[in-house]
Image 1 (cartoon, rainbow, N blue to C red):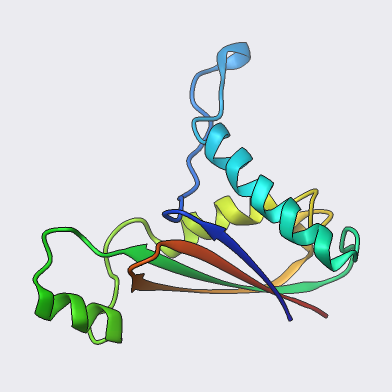
Image 2 (tube, rainbow, N blue to C red; image 1 turned 60 degrees about the vertical axis):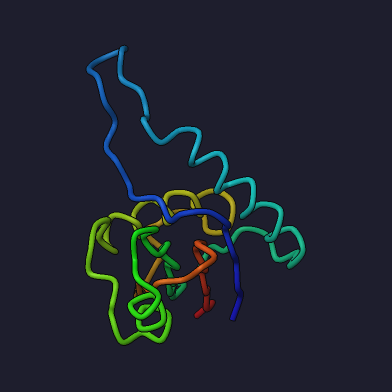
Length: 133
């Protein structure tokens, strides 16, 4: 099991904006940021790009809203209150699968199974667990 961690608030996927030659990726800087951390951690494993099937589990540590009471904050950290607000897991999965492409896996079509969870955390980050099948 390979563990990759990307600091910061988890980012959802957003489609390209514009049209024709004037199209652009609105998440370009966020993608570069995430890919930087993925490359830095991936080089430590010295495996190279995965060309076979892989199972991926995403764990999105979402920030606690600042206006939350102390009682609710404790319940959020315990998992009693689940994170059911936007962004949704599938859009965040798409973004981070796209970031993994070309660095960790050859193509996102190699992902055999995907699962994800959103939890509240005092330190927002994204944890990606990879299992080579």
